[in-house]
Length: 125
Ligand SMILES: Nc1nc2c(c(=O)[nH]1)N=C([C@H](O)[C@H](O)COP(=O)(O)OP(=O)(O)OP(=O)(O)O)CN2
Ligand SMILES: [Zn+2]
Image (tube, rainbow, N blue to C red; front, side):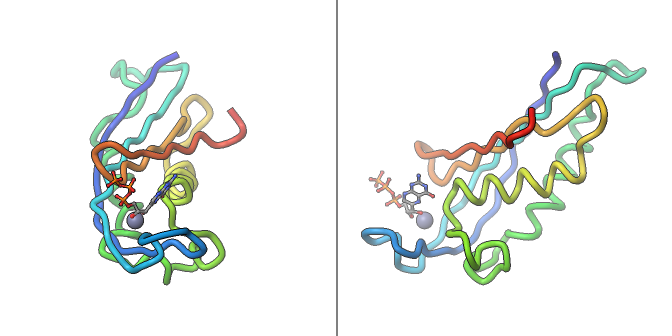
């Protein structure tokens, strides 16, 4: 099994509904995002997935959330824009772009601060 990982980031505002305390108020974070892709076969160049391609796919997906008020996005109308659900949103959108027969998005981690992170792994693999 092979694994590649890239990191990226985005900035956004949110507030957490039904959350006890100050996070119910409008505020923002600079999220750091880690994307892990796994697979069992390398291409003719000996790579699982070009880092550049993965970074570009990640940037494309991050455009959906960067500098947005996350609560306004349809995905977060019924789900709180917690780091857990943000990681899941990114995972689902990236999987649609990156997954193939021999490689798949394994996890997406959303670091809300330098010491707090949530990770989504998906359900099928
Ligand atoms: N599991 C999760 N816990 C929390 C989330 C989350 O997405 N998943 N989000 C928040 C809020 O976004 C909040 O903005 C975090 O605020 P902060 O004050 O930084 O949180 P802490 O209390 O952990 O900060 P310390 O200053 O380090 O105590 C909260 N929780
Ligand atoms: Zn927050």
